[in-house]
Amino acid sequence: MQPRGPAAPGLALWTSFFLGNLTLYFLLNWTPTVPVEAGLPGDKAIRAGMLLNLGGGLGMLSLGYLSARWSIYRMMSGFFVLGGLFIMVLGHASKATDLLFGLTILAGFFSLGDLIGLYSLAARL
Image 1: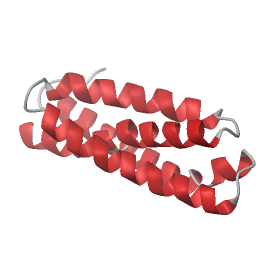
Image 2: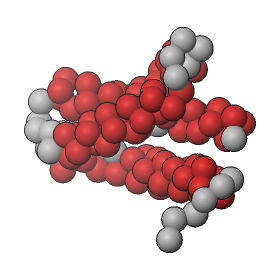
Image 3: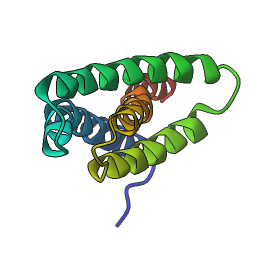
């Protein structure tokens, strides 16, 4: 039985908040570990964590700017899907430092950038 009426969008929103923040938690805790496991020194692993947050900040600013032009619902869906894909690719990255850092920025851009859009969706509900 599926919820109907005003409960359905609310449940979808809070599920998205929960899963988005769970993703944030794991990304912030595991991003330095992935480069170390790939064979990079600790200072570069810390840099990867910094780049993840940089990408997230850029993603939030971009989503806010683009939401004035396009549907926030479609952009949020795209950001969530692309964020998941980049996280999966990041998990299989090799020792190529530039590739690893680029994937980290993109994973942050899409997976952390979409969290700010949830607040906009909450206000619209």
